Length: 282
Image 1: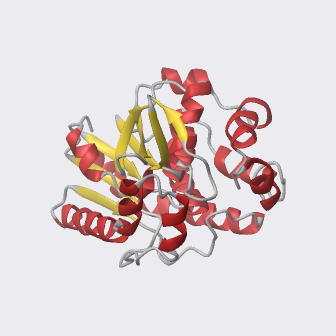
Image 2: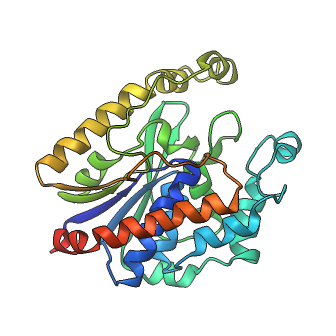
């Protein structure tokens, strides 16, 4: 177990599939020494370290239809579809309070992935505590192009980690974790296609040519990473967990029944894989 890590892919509300699995692991006392999360994998994965079963589903269902959470009104008013102040600072401090103390006390290392839009390369952060700045790191990891603004931290302009490193298995290995459980939010066999409407991104990020190149090649990078994950799984170094089929949910889904269904599918998958995960951790 000492050298076994956990890698969490993003994917917006598809990440609730991952949350369902993590809830099952918490309920059964299954822990890892290291986790790296990307985008939704970071947003929802922090609840694993804070031991808050059901939190990701709970607040997302509660916020369904709330224009202060995510909406076109928010986009027009703030320049962000997902209202950054409300989502990342009001919800976890006033509405569904995040357990800062339990997070800090849990010994598991939790790293997140962002993308530096000036270099077009991934930037990794060890999220040791979740205070105001910690919440900004989580926001940066999940800040989608066009509908979100860059987040300035460590002298960098940061956005969605999934743009540059959607599947940070090699990063986990570089941290000394030779064996890893990787949770995908797309079914096995999925391959990403070139980004549509690249011209729009070129206009929006004309000052950041490395960002544009990152977006242009994103599908190739992702597909190569996925092939590497599959190779490591075939070699017995990765336990790969994926949805049984394409998830019927949008990235910014606000239908509460769909949110519940995807979380339940994650729970069912987690229960089905539980013994294999425990065996892999031995």
